[in-house]
Image (cartoon, rainbow, N blue to C red):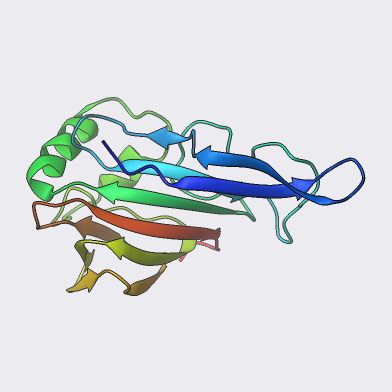
Length: 178
C-alpha cells in the first residue's frame, strides 16, 4: 500500500478571504497494474500564468503522463523494486494502449529498460525516500533521498534496484518538443 500524501489546498471564500478548501489524502491515485508504479496526482495547471480563481479540484481527471499544453502537473510516484515492476511493465506494453500516452512513449526502439519514455516537458524530480537510478540512452546516475534531477525532454527510465519502494516528487511543465 502506498504512502498517499496528505494534500492541503488553499483557496478563497465568497468574501475573498483565504481559506483551506481541502485537507486529506489525495484522492487521485493511479496504478495501471499490480507491481507497476503508483502515481499520486496532487495538482495541475492548464495555462501559464496559472489561474487561481475558483475552488474546484484542478486534478479531477483520469491519468495522463504529460502535463497539459501550456500547463504543469505535480505528482508523487512510488517506484516499486524492478524485481516486481519489470514484469508489470512487460504486461502493460503487451496490452492495448490506454490513451494515457505511456504505452506509446515506452515502445522505444533499442531501449535497455522497459520503462523508457519521453515527454515534451521539463521535469523537476526530487527523491523523497529510497534510491533510484535515472537512465538515459547513454549513461545512468544513482539518485538518493534529497537529490534532484532536471529532466529536459530526454528519453529516460527509472530503475529501482533495491527491494524497497522509492518515492519521487515530480513537477512537469509543458515544453516544446526536442
